[in-house]
Amino acid sequence: MLIPHGTIVAVADGEILNLFRNGGDEAGPKLTPIPDADISSDNKGSGGRHQSSSANPDDSQQNEDGFAAGIAAMLNKRVLDGKIENLIIVAAPRTLGELRKHYHKSLSAILLGEVAKDLTGHSVADVEKSLAAA
Image (cartoon, rainbow, N blue to C red):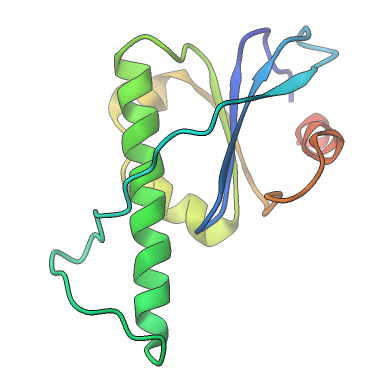
């Protein structure tokens, strides 16, 4: 996958978001970390709030889905504010599925690609390698 200069790359799972900007060119990307964004995970998607219980695995999944919805909301806002012109999303498969439910049409229009792979916690070189192979 070619990554134009200035493209934002979001690498996410159900708990972590890492953002990078391509400071290189299309054929030779050089991803550099950009400051973490505040993500609201209040949007659980199911409509109701209830007490969390570590004994209930559904709460964990609900929290991950809420985090994915929060990531999408933040990315949507940045796209609408003109702060993101090109975007690539790399996310764990389930997280990517949840993110897609919340894409604004403007985000979909500037989305260059998606990679369904969990690369949170991996090195920048691993992310660049996965994108080159996509």
